[in-house]
Length: 229
Image (cartoon, rainbow, N blue to C red):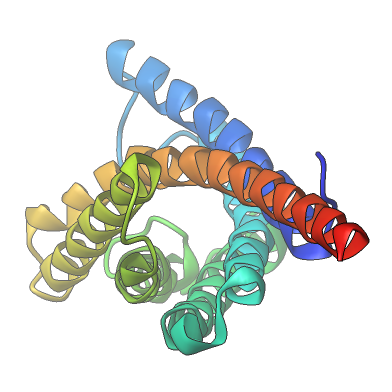
């Protein structure tokens, strides 16, 4: 990438990594649905896959938001700062659930100790951890994208990012409300973090690249003007 700056570099590569992992995740989910294996709770192998992928997503999405905040003009940083704060809460919620799943829950199952373990299963009925997962992906990341959406106000690429962020936010909040109401509508969240999220990260990959190129061109023009002067 031309016009290297840390924020462009970290934003580009974290958005790209999120997109690649997201496509893999989506294809696995699609294969499960088409093959009739999509059940709740999912099979053990799929749970392990989802746990590892989700744990990787958390720092990547935090880095994306931090990069956006870094390259945003000061007058508009209120949007990215709010988005970054909500993203940290998202990452904490989801990481606690998945780290517990891959650590304490797995170890107790292997040891045959299952007493009261259902409260801590990542997909258990009325599980504490499932509540953390929905709160993270639905409520906090939904608020993060709603907060950041006004940043993208003009241009075709920006408009797509803006409305996809708004769509994610609305789906996430509806999913969270459905979970609290013990309603099947909570499943609508899978559309947000199973598909919409990775459309957003894919477009943000292009966004960071374009911003880097624009910055490099502006720097060259400024240097040229200084030489003339």
